Length: 557
RNA sequence: GUCCCUGUAGCUCAGCGGAAAGAGCGACUGCCUUCUAAGCAGUGGGUCGGGGGUUCGAAUCCCUCCAGGGACGCCA
Image 1 (spheres, rainbow, N blue to C red):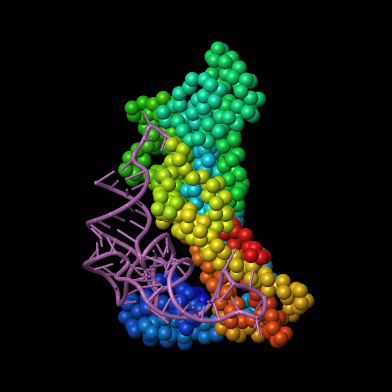
Image 2: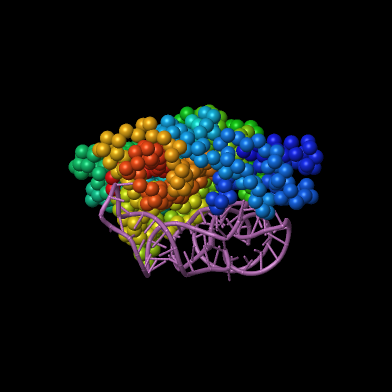
């Protein structure tokens, strides 16, 4: 339709109905008022100034020149200068058949054209359990990845494991201290260590897994006497990390979040990416040495300060390994696009990461970073402080067990990533029976129940004639179902999966409304057949939407 | 001090240049002898943080002020 408008403009120009001028992008919108048709353009209003003409006059001349496509019933002009398109109802009703034909594929598009895109998310240090805020990133990432996959992108979902660096070191030392304490030995926790109770539990588990107290105690004594303390600390630490990683994985699975790839930070040092990326930067003159450390001279790229790559003790910073990681993503694995989802505490890392990607000779546009804002927890009036180091936190697992995976997903998907969330556990639990989550799922269950009844009564509606669908609630439902591909396109272009949950609610509302007004299974056999087809198509669209959100579509409730 | 996010109905939040400002929850009124009332229909509720500006048109863009959160480390 946009193209038709464009053609009409050039036609108008060639007939001197419009002066020659450059066209603004021709955009179509969906009017909120149904009287304004299905699609609308405000092009005449936008052209009016440059053309020095009355927008209504422009609108009328464009409409007179426009070629009506098959599905469009009429094109109308509305003041102050809109052009409104209305779809033909027979075209609409035919789409029901089309949705049924496409089934689970309905809504899928080929926007990506097979482009390789990596979505990296969660990527929490394996030093302790995931908390609620991590769940937000997890759901954002997995939903985005699913929608990208449904729109023609080749997607890799990846978790970056920070298994190197100083945080890991602190974890190893904390765990070692806890193990010693567990065995009745005198040991001090490092001051920057992890003090959560989970670490004490982990120490117990590890001792158990290594054959019990006596065995580990003698191992330790031997190590101490032979000066191999470091080795045993590392060994216990690695075991601890494996266990933490394992529980992170299972917590995420509980939420329906899975990964294609678990990528080790350490491997960047073992396999040379770190070295190659640093050499690249050095050769291109992006590094300098001062105060005994190696710096990335981001100031030459317009950043407000430089950043350390290699500390004066020779150890690489987190920034340096992240550079190696992105070197690997773009230059070695050849992703066309990389989407990273980070928590708000990494916000300061965004611009320097973009700068360094540019320094690696990659268009920084290919790196997109979504910052998911903080989640603060409440139980009624009481705020819950979340701090991993002091160990006071509500874990993701506790949350999922309390409110359920579907409700969690829907809740997180109902807010845009850049608004801070106030998560009231009490409310989430109390409302769970009258939640929007159930509102949407209930629509699906209702449909399932209608289809079950049809089956019981052995109604064969395979030859149902959808052109009999002429009532307003029926056509409204079809129009709503046809919006799914547009919503998916919007999610992909804005990288904002929350549009899905709002669409899901609207779709459910439209269905519930139809359900109240139109009896599906009735004496009128022909109409029953047509409506059963419509209802089945609605089930397809609802299930697809829920599926993209990673939620279940229950047959009964 | 600098940078990022946010300020919309009593609460939690959508809308982010278009044609009466929306949803859920909460409040109030109706609707179950027919496919699931976890539903529907309706009522009430808003200086879209304040003030300037740009525009035919601003909750939406720009400037400024105020408020809340976050980031500014040789932590990650």
